[in-house]
Amino acid sequence: QVQLVESGGGLEQAGGSLRLSCAASGRIFNLNVMGWYRQAPGKQRELVATITSVGRTNYADSVKGRFTISRDNAKNTVNLQMNSLKLEDSAVYYCKASVTEWGPHYWGRGTQVTVSS
Image 1: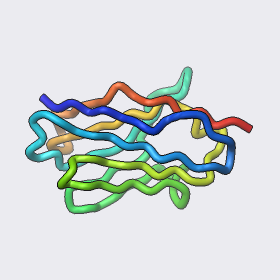
Image 2: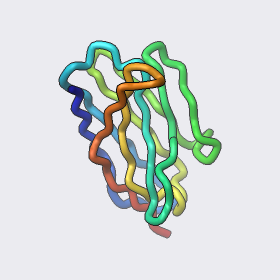
Image 3: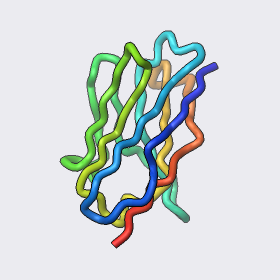
Image 4: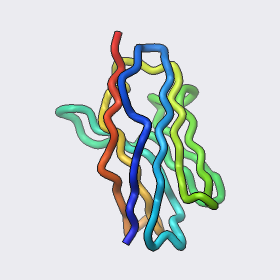
């Protein structure tokens, strides 16, 4: 099993920045893809950004140019630097790790990000 623990959420004003971190532990031999998803109240969970073990990244259009995902394979961590925050970025942010594109998949419990005006 793989355990994922997120940290770094909180309250920030629009235009500000936050940095999320996710630490993986357990059977973490080959987590090919790690990433961040978010879910706002009343909405479906959506992809924010992913990164492969070789550094290939993918971003949702809504965060391109504002968010940056990074990964430290030695420390088994994945980070999300969020700049120029908007009100619509408010959501619970979840860390996800996958051995392959088809699974198995592992999820963290989430961390709340609230952007205020």
